[in-house]
Length: 306
Image (cartoon, rainbow, N blue to C red; front, side, top):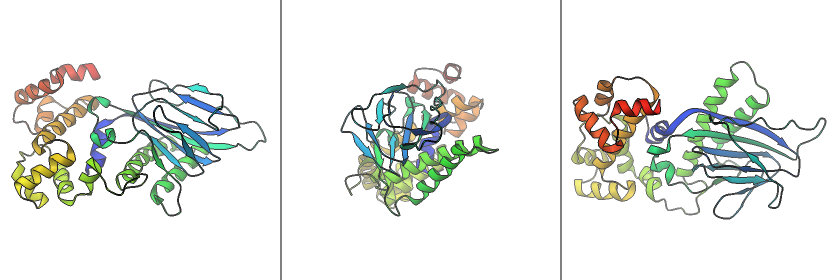
């Protein structure tokens, strides 16, 4: 897997959910905080998104707002609109929107979605994101994201056989498109990437990251990774730590433990195989490293999160 797909797969849990809402002015929704992430797309009309911190964001037709941190926020037709509380079900499902008045034209049509995430191993690819990722509608911008939004809206508006699977797949696709748009510079105020945006844009560091993610079980050395990056050992180690936020082998250990926790959480893979897939020569060595990281033995962790 590539680094972005891998990071999302490590955090995603459950099924994503979405809803298509047709609204008449005045309207306003107050979303409580959650452990997941969410998005809003204005298909018709306009809206104000009011985050818990920072200035309100005006959204027009075609605008996308992605909220990575699961904090409460407001979405409304105006800054002084009356608000109704919106609470997601425990599995992340949206409540059914009110039915539009018969023979009426909605003032706003919104496409909203939510993802469940395991924040105990939050990857910095997501934690570095701002409060709101605003992707304004522009001719020719993020064409593939727009196509996925259109397909999702069509499936929600007129469900057909197979829509449940199609909607879930489109939501996962949209999440990657949101993140790709941001990391490629869309919606950022500066043209000079920093942190993980810079790491992914750096040919050498991104090559090393791809190698680590492709084979976390390999006994990587800094020299091997430096060779993948086309840099000297010292130059690579310094640049990797500056951009990624951890030295190369520290990041490798963190990623191995993150991968192990996902394997323990999502299926019944034997501990022996989990150890092998994350670079440990014995189940005992793996269990010792895992308990040092999580404070629990692997079996205890599996029972707690199952």
